Image (cartoon, rainbow, N blue to C red):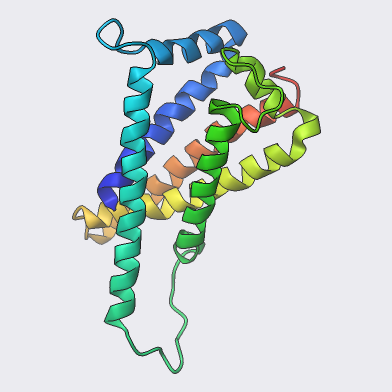
Length: 210
């Protein structure tokens, strides 16, 4: 679970950096979107790299969900008899909502692909015009799209905060000082990711990107 999580986190940050190119203007952002389709050429035909990446990410997501399911089953088998009185256990909000957060993130990924990749759910989308599609997607009249995006990205942040800390422990971190550093680092990385992703729809909403 830690291994697949790390792969997905790396992609999230790379994708966020790409998204921020929208602040350099329409020409730069559209050029970046076109460049993604030509990575690997002429060794690979156009868009082959993207499909290889999508396949790898799909395997990582499936592996992550599978690992989560296996761990949940093992935890349940380890305690086959329910507590007569379950005492309160200290834990962060992110830890207690990890599973539901994962479901929200998965639904968001599916929606995001249909919205801004295939343009199936974007009535004003035009293939090849990435900047325009983003601006149209988060236009004031589509406030519900922006709201869903905000809720989903915040869920990603909570999921990431707990996930990074758990992955570090899984990979061998056991000291108290290391745990403090891991918690602070997880919080900082999560905040950077949330702010980075939400800056785009907010910029469209206030007219900085149009």
